[in-house]
Each structure stands twice: as C-alpha cells, then as structure tokens.
Length: 249
Image 1 (cartoon, rainbow, N blue to C red):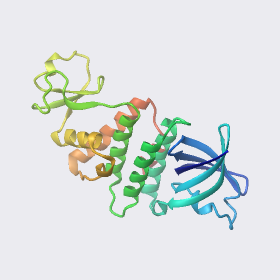
Image 2 (image 1 turned 90 degrees about the vertical axis):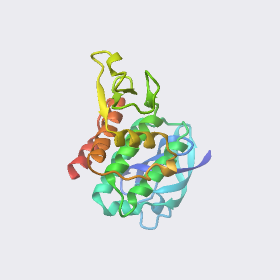
Image 3 (image 1 turned 180 degrees about the horizontal axis):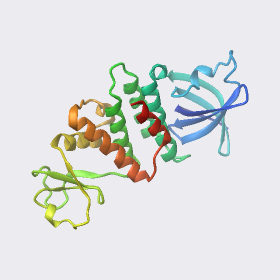
C-alpha cells in the first residue's frame, strides 16, 4: 500500500554502502522508521530529501508497520544548521526529545509544525540558542501532557499577588500571601516577575508567536535552567545529546 505524508528526518543510520534507516517525524503517523534504498548513491533522486532535518513530502510503501521510501520531494532542507556546530547539536538534542516521546501510528501534525518552526528560527543568523532551547523544552512538555497551571494562584485565584512561587510538586502557582497554607515539605521555587511572564507567554501563545521574544541577564539564565529541569523531571531521564550541547556551550 502506498501512503503519502509530510515529515522531517530526525534520525539516520547507514545500512551498508548505499542504504539507510530513517527516523521520520510525520504528520499522520508520528515518528516512524523507514528504509531508504540507494539514497547514498551519487545519482539517487531521493538523496536531497532524506538528509538529517530535511522537511520533505514522502511516498512510502507500507506493509503492516514497515515503511520503505518509494519517492520523496524536498520542502525545506534546513541545511544551514550543518554549518554551525552549536546549532546543529541543539537540533540533534531536540530531535532526540521527539524520538523518545513520540508514539508511532498516532498523528504528529502539531509537533511536526512546532519542530519545523523551531528549526526555521534556529537556522536564522542571529538566533538565540538558549531561548529557543528553553522555549521548545517548556512548550513541548505541555504538548506531551505535562501542562503546568500558570493562570493564577491556586488558593486565591489572583493573576499576580506580590512574590509568586511555582510548586515543583503540584506544577502550579501560589502567591506570597497564600504560601503559608502550603505543606512544610512542598518544594517551591520563587519566580522573578519577568520569568513568570516569559513562562506564561511560552505556554499560552500561538506557535507562530512563540519565539517572538528576547531575554537578557538573570531572567534569560533562569528561564533556560527552569525549562530544562522541568522537562527532564517530567520525563524522568537525561539525554547524552544534551550533555554534548552543554559542553559546546
């Protein structure tokens, strides 16, 4: 059976001299593994469409849950990432998050669109890797079902009320006036006003506007650390590709 999808190559492993396995984030089937025959040959017509981070339209031969590429047409290559080791290593880490969390045979349209926007912003000349990393980590956590409640204090319902705190146990907010009502062992993180504003923007804005902000100084550093810790805590694991990116940084 032939099926046609759009997708981004998020992983690639060679098989012999001319073939490879591809991990592809698709709009219809989530992340799938597909066999690409002959794509390493010089005259391969599919070669431009199957590079790492290539965004392409794929036609697969599908047998049960096995996919092999029949044909592919490039939509966007994001080739510029390969010229910057820091950006490329960040993209590899973000792709690892997708591969670990995506479920095969379930729609991946939202995460595909999100990842395409992320790669587009990352590829730009003056992109801020730390902001892109933090925004992706925090937003993708919510898309995976780990949605924190940042709307208001969980006790009094106020949007802002003095010093605001984030409960690392309950993933919600509590204000300075209500903090005494929490349990003694509940771990609370005080939030700078600019940090809370940034967290709300990343969580609730549209994908088109998601990367439309800048941060400097303490808020930038705090957001980067918080977003990473929040995602990894929810997933219960780390990533070697993240360690490599941080060593470069």
